[in-house]
Image (cartoon, rainbow, N blue to C red; front, side, top):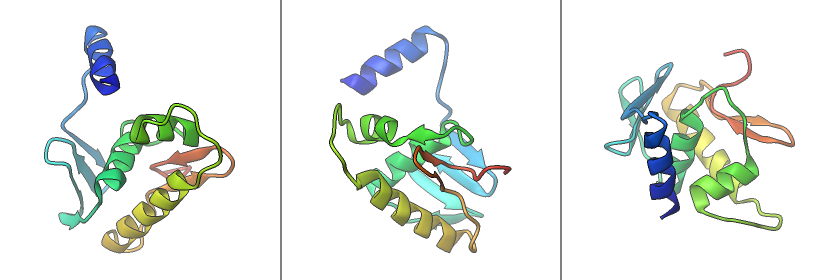
Amino acid sequence: MLARARGLVRRSRGETLRDAVRVGPLVVDRRSRCATINGRVVELSAKEFALLDALARDPRRVLTKQELLRDVWGYIATGRTRTVDSHASRLRRKLETCGAGQRFVSNVWGIGYRLLPEGA
């Protein structure tokens, strides 16, 4: 319901989400819920894809762990949790494996994550 409300607000402002986002050799296709690097499909769980999708919306922006917990997992308030860290670690490892060692998910210490490393 929250996602629908956000979509209505976004559309009322004239914003749309693209079906596919390209970040260098990485393509995140929202319609098919598939990610590829140089044409190779990256096998991702549903939450890993949702995390990647959230990061791909603005690849250079740092998303805080609180934002990711809210947007990807739907948590409103949490104590200390390592959920984001463990999913980001698995996502990073899978992307690096398919991307011949290229690093995509970047940790910004004490804040959160961004898709592209600084300076990329």
